[in-house]
Amino acid sequence: MQLKLIDSYNRQMGSMRVSITDRCNFRCVYCMPEEGLDWFDSKKLLTFDEIERIVRIVVRMGVKEIRLTGGEPLVRKGVANLIRRLSQIEGLEDLSLTTNGFLLKELAGDLAAAGLKRINVSLDSLVKEKFFKLTRRNALHKVMEGLEELEKYPQIRPIKVNVVAMRGFTEDEIIDFARLARRKPYIIRFIEFMPLEADRIWKKEDVLTGKEILEKINTTYMKLVPMGGEDPSSTSKNYQFEDGIGQIGFINPVSEPFCSTCNRIRMTADGMFRTCLFSQVETDLRTPLRNGCSDEELEQILLKAVKGKELKHHINDSSFKRTTRTMSQIGG
Ligand code: SAM
Ligand code: SF4
Image (cartoon, rainbow, N blue to C red):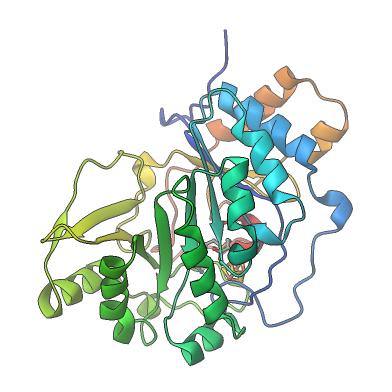
């Protein structure tokens, strides 16, 4: 009988984030240090063959969605080839990618042709100077051009724009993002800032909650109406403007954790399997992969790891312990 990736709280794993590189062409303050982060040894990076093999196995075990991430996934050479290979896997219903958008203008066509179905583009400010302050790169125009390029490829829909919301930084742009959601075919999603950054700047007070943003849009701009019908495992609460034009989502992992229905697992670029963003333990898949393990043995390793999946994260507890990896080394 085919084993399924069901954890000890009876959650069937449905979605896997696959990081394909720890490298990045940005240095976002909430993620990477300005300099000094050591890259993984290239020999440790999983090859496309190894990634494809693991994806085939987890799909057999019930995973329906794969999201490629990083670091910045578009800096990995041949990413469109990997997408082409993964898009042919039977049983895989959804293949998506999270990117900072810098290389999208050049690569959007290749990604669409390779079979990419959905995309998330990170964009935290619409103001050049603020964008630079946050990403430490002068690249707002490149990301905006990348988004425009995506509009030419209806195969890749929806286009979601992820905005990490930080107190003292995001407030004065909330309405501009709301306007963007109405003007362009982009779903804007505000994500609460989480303690996963290399520089350890996170403070609970800096988390601008989804509820605060929703209230600001409702009271000062236009009423948002819940869309409902989300998948129970969805991380995002989705709204549309009362006239039906424009969608906004809220991902509130700090103020309203969604752990009880979490069906996500992760694989880092160096082949470590993680059952939570905040996991203190990870399971090595690279060594068994390279030591000639059979698919059945890999299934057992994955199942054992999933049985140990955390019930919830502890960001809000005084006992909270950070992971030793930054977001860029895990894959967000
Ligand atoms: N480089 C790509 C990008 O930025 O979209 C993919 C990797 S990035 C780690 C994935 C997502 O994690 C991005 O949307 C980013 O904004 C988000 N992220 C990174 N650090 C975060 C943090 N400390 N709290 C909340 N979200 C974070
Ligand atoms: Fe790079 Fe994405 Fe991290 Fe920004 S959030 S530094 S773009 S990996």
